[in-house]
Image (cartoon, rainbow, N blue to C red):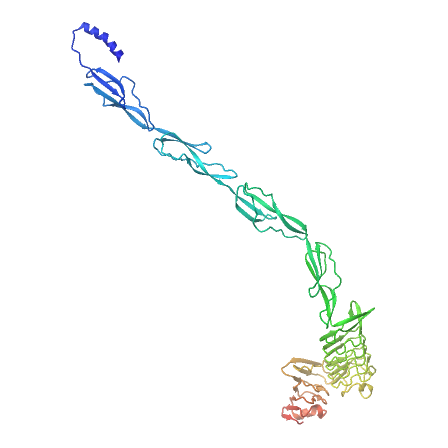
Length: 596
């Protein structure tokens, strides 16, 4: 301004020198102030009517935290000078922009954004991540420092929550099968198996014992699988030999495939009535292929066998034995060819005896007193029957001799009181009967001879063997005798030929009844003293009623006859066929008691 004034002075002097002097006009002062009242410029002696002008560079205003400023205008508005005037600079304020940086925990930039002063920054990028370590996993938590409104450039750093890692521990058996899973094993902990002890089944040759796990236990650093380990040992099997009563004879512990040692033949005694003869083991003895039990087996017999060089003799172990007795023809691969003398005497509970073909001689008194013997089988090969061999066998019913028989000695069948029927072979002769073979066996009703027999019965020694009356012999034979002693049996007898009884059948009935149908001969003594029979039903076709055929001394009997009293009279060969005092006869034409 001063330079400007100095430049004007010479000009003014020249003007004054060349013209007349005029009165000086009053100048005005123009003051220029900044926004805060600081004087920026003063223009003095400003000519009236002139337009004020700020001669310096336009003023500036420093930015503050909130705004950046640019000059806007002078206030009041510039007008021609008419007086002293003050002008104040005004500014436009623009909100200041700041940079907000978002960085990860390790300083890695995530996002950079610009915000105006006072704005609330908000992270808009991908969620920050922090790599897990074997020990920890990291989960984004927040930003540091706490987010506030923008007042300047800012950097926010991601923060993370640290969590200990858990791992899966898998426990497997030898075959790869998972037996347990621990899903929450923390890093650094020591694995510990808490399940049932693993097992491995034995195979044929080995047993297996659990020994531990592989790999060895180490602190947990990740998922891990442990596999059960086993030690193998040669498998032992138990081989037992036991007696028939399960008593242990021997026990062996042997490996698979080993040879079994068989113990000596065992013995067994259970009672006084039977002998037990070891016959082997219940199954084949093989090389070891598993646990096995071998049980002794026995032949159970009431017989006692005695070895005599090349054969056995036999006897009954106890005369109290009850039941049937079948004597074998061989024992331990040798013949049983001899009966011990008296070996079966007074065995009054045996009911049946089978004598094999290997025995030719039945000793004297061998079966004497076997009072309940009902059934006797003499096999082909039996030749001689000793004195009183079967004496007193009261319940013996029928008897058939084999063709091998040569001699029946005195009293062999003495007092066999219920012996009913005797059958002789084709080759029978009177010479085989020695003395009173059948004395006292008074129930004999039938003696039969096979076709071709030369045996004759009449007066003489052979006839004296019998005490029963025998009216005739039969040249042909096919006869099965009824079991008329059975009190609960109905007996049906039929015949197609008067000399040839062809069949006898048995049907169950209530009570003790005898039913006779057809053209049959009822011979003498046929049903004498059959005290079990209470009623006899006789068909009118019956051909004959023999002497004493239904005679009972003390037993009441009812005869039911299909025909008339006269027809019944014609059947009788003797009036003593029944006991009049004890017999009631019911015929088609009436009932007769105590008379006939």
